[in-house]
Length: 260
Image (cartoon, rainbow, N blue to C red; front, side, top):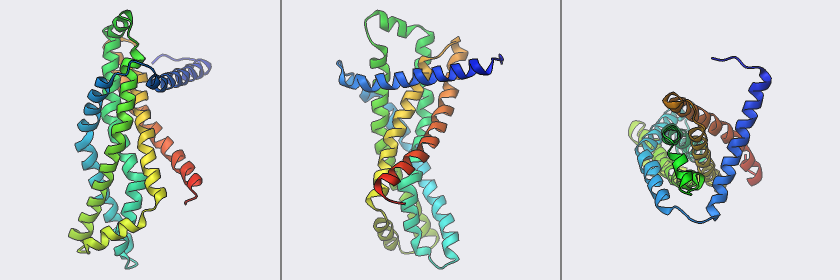
């Protein structure tokens, strides 16, 4: 690894942030410019959404099972196991469902976007696209951003449902509690703030996943090794950024909505 001075390192990171911000702004601005590549959006929605459906649902189901099991152990000491539905509902809908769906989609699709665009950079397909008068940002980036935000929103809803079903499995099958009471408790415990926070997050996470994947893909250098490096860096950056942003978004929305 080549050693560089701290000043050069800081300069490169600041430049990367500027380039990423510029890419993100252009991706949003292109939504209001023609042409709109609807076919590309549908194709990306199929790849990102339906391709990630099984892993998101299975992950959320087991996180619901794990949360219910741990809650049952704690609540059992106080004879309050009937509150499992409340804990699972709030934990999955407001926090774990959006976060887990975002991380799973980031692991699968941020790498896919980065490798696909990186390969196009290496094989000079993007240069050919520019030569033909097509804007690569509008053709390649904007459809991926829109599709990821749109599909992650609905994947999170389905993931939340699977998390609640996982909690019901533990409550009714393993612990022998009443399933009707579980769902009634879960439903009554959710308020507008919980659902709103849980549905805003996947939109933000989807934007992060797509823009990070596109940024690293379009910044690929160094041939095929550069493609592999960009793929790895995109996944790491997307996951770290999702976790960090999750904290600030949760706190900000809680303050705005006046909840705790």
